[in-house]
Picture 1 (tube, helix red, strand yellow):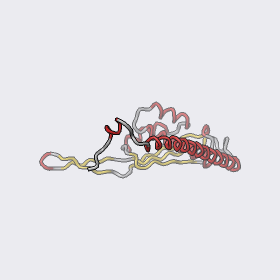
Picture 2 (cartoon, rainbow, N blue to C red):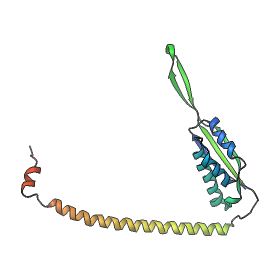
Picture 3 (cartoon, rainbow, N blue to C red):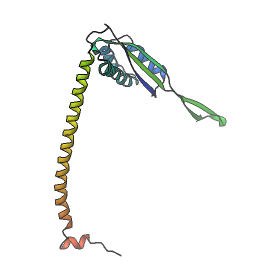
Picture 4 (cartoon, one colour):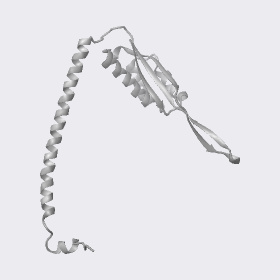
Length: 179
């Protein structure tokens, strides 16, 4: 089964992005991640993020095992080109082309169906994740309410201090004229 992920309008020229794409073609997913970690091109972090996205797509949508995946293809194409102008001699203008890339990574299984999850297992995992997420949201809401109550208590004390009129020499120093 093939799984893909796309990245559009990356502000790096396709000619430079192809170097990194060709590097990871045919590698196992984990090896490709290691290669992208140590590779020193500007496209590497973007490609790594895209590869991680493709892995997540395969695990969450299709129940595939990431140890059984490899990079089937990594395509880089030209995206929209931004055109700018630079002044040149004798009143001329030189065109500057700022190129963008469209990248697509396609993953495939080495052995078809190995360690693949069934639909029931995937549904059970999704329900568990949903339950955990709701639990975390509830905990965050409780802690936020608790912190708001603490701020209200402190805020009430501060308001009480502010409402007391300044007496003595402080009143004379900080008094403003209303003219």
